[in-house]
Length: 97
Ligand SMILES: [Zn+2]
Image 1 (cartoon, protein in one colour):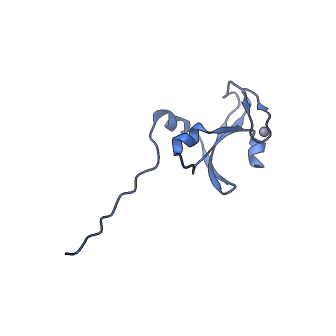
Image 2: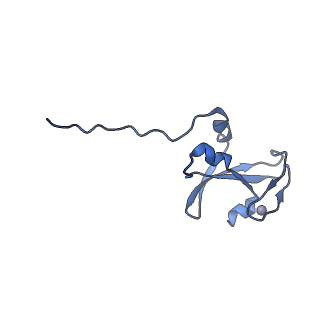
Image 3: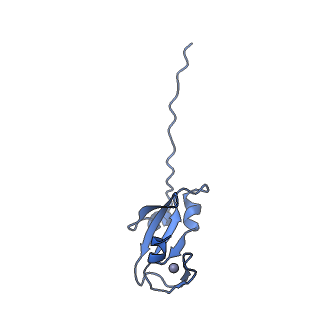
């Protein structure tokens, strides 16, 4: 009896959660930094209402200041965990990271 190889469908890794989709709906881009893929989403002026600490320089990003939100695309814990671990950066700090 001949065995037939069954072709398995690869599951789509993309999560389909409402808030997740909404966060991703902006003009996001993917960049490679230090061998990893990162999602980079700009936050426009006036779009944030609390201060963040930039991991690049350790200084505050004042509320309302345009900056970038980044998160890893290739984390082992999955897209949602990556998104929850997102970081806020000054645009210029991200560029020299
Ligand atoms: Zn910074």
